[in-house]
Length: 451
Image (tube, rainbow, N blue to C red; front, side, top):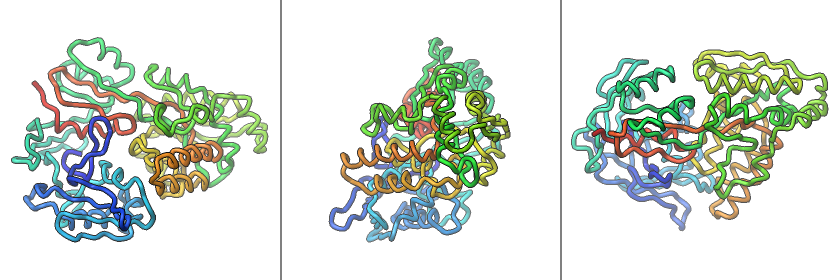
């Protein structure tokens, strides 16, 4: 986030703003998305950022052998034009309303086209890597004479990995660090009560249940719906998040947005009798023996899984809990080596298209998405919403998408969770990004200073 730069970024309200692109928009004459680059932008090696660098970056991400997070999105680009050094024109294979949002994602930094090793990619952000001890800490140094005047505000940032959430909070309280992310939910009240510190938090990420849809019984949407109605979410909010969350009984659409609907938001409400009836309808009146994959690396995953396991058992879904380390959780998720899995995730951005990475099961395998599951109507409506430019029509399309997803059940929502950053009150300039963007808030460290 801090070493690289994207074409577009987000302001503190979550609205799009230019980053490498000083302006951007859609050409009404031919439908191309046009990005005009800031001529001041330079890479850390002194080379100017040009349209050819943007083109090269997109081509690397879209490549057939690419494993990049945004490969599928970049493959939706038909051709790239670079009429001059500071203009990029993207012609899409189909109309796409959300292209600028793709290029605001932290997975899409623009890289110097002379880069040969992507592990050492040349960025154009406000910081460069100064030193690191892998698995322990990294130190970032401000780029001298950075091309954005007045940025960054801090010369050096040292980031230390502290996996244990109690030790992370203790490091802040003892003064060993000035700033922490992923504030433990059990410690949020203590931070708020301590005049030395400030807590910035928002609701955005969420917990869910994923399915292996390649084999019985979870290839049957009736069984998936039975899972959806089996779990009492209030207990997950209480146990896993100390009350710092909200129940999620539908698709993860944020309340208060145009896409949210009160009735649809309760489409998978807690109803154990309905759950049992759905199991019987699917031919499993005597219940199911299955497995539930989770990780012990994060307490919220394990705690959520344990609560879900108890409620599933109450309706006859007897799930053996399999607790693994994080790397195993990721690899088994990608390979489909599970029946059910509990996961924590966030949409890519606050527009419903940001849920594609969670709900579109036609995409390649990922540990944060159900495996081999068929949800064609959900996928179709996600595509339709992405192609629509009229706001009112998009709202109705995404409500239809929620209806389809409630029937096809590509995922079962469990709970929204509060995401928090805590810091010494001597720290100024940091702002948490809203909703789904909260996990990307580290980008605002360039505006942050101490003292």
